[in-house]
Amino acid sequence: MSKLQSIMWLALVALLTTSVQAQLSFELPVGQPDSRTLMVQGKVDELFERGEYDRAYFIYRNELAPVGDKYAQYMIGFMHLTGMGVDEDPVAASAWYRLAAERGTPQFMAVRDMLLGDLTADERQRSDRLFLEIRHEHGDLAILLSLIKSGTRSIASSTGSRLNTTSSPMTVIDTRSPNQGQSSAAYYGRIESELRGYLIMLAKVGDFPDLETEPDRIDLNEIERLVNERLETIPN
Image (cartoon, rainbow, N blue to C red; front, top):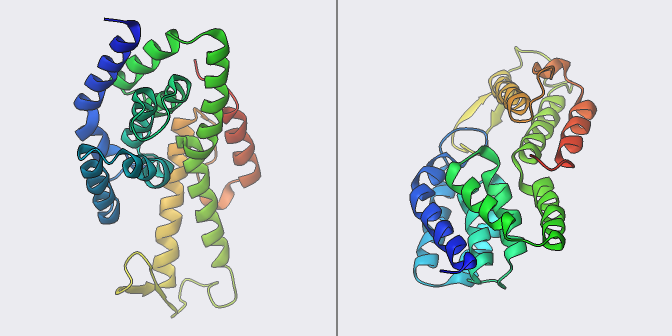
C-alpha cells in the first residue's frame, strides 16, 4: 500500500468513526444543532451517499463549514484528497484537515499529521497560507468573534430612548421564534447572557486567561486585536 493510499484509508476510517459524534457536537457555541441545520446535514449526507459530490461539496463548503461544523470541514478535506466533487489537491485537503482538527479530535488529528508529513516544504508553506486563510473565515476563534460583535451590536441598539429602562412595555419579536413575543428586557437579557457565554468560551478556546467576560465591561477593539493576532499564528 502506497503512502497516499494509507492516508486515504486512515481518512476514511476517521470519517466513519467520528461522523455521528461530530454531527451531534459541531455547533459553536456548544449546544444541539437547530432544526434547519439538522435538515441540511441530512440532505448533504444523502447527496454524498448517492454520489452527487458536486452538490454535497457546495453545501459542506458554503452552509456547514462557515458555522463551525468540524465534520463538514473534514469532509471538504476528504473530498479534496480523493477528488470527489472538486479537484484533487492534497495541499487543500491538509489545510481543511488542520481546521477540522482544531478542537483536538484524535482521528482528525491523526489524518492531519499523516498528510502534513507527506508534503514537501513548498507544499507545507502553501498549506500554511491556505490554513490561515480559511481559519480567518471559519475557525472557532473567528466564529466566536463574529458572535461577540453581533451580540454587542444588539445590546448597543437597546440603549435608544424607547429601550433604556428595564420596565419598558415594548414587545420584541424574536425572529427565531416569530410566534412568541417577549418584553425588551427579557429579549436583551437573553442576548446579554449569550454574549457572556461567548466571551467565556473565547477566553477558553483562545487561551486568553485575562479576558474580560462581562459584556458591559469589554473592550471590543482589544478583543478583536487579540483574536486576529492569534489567527495569524500557526498552532503547534
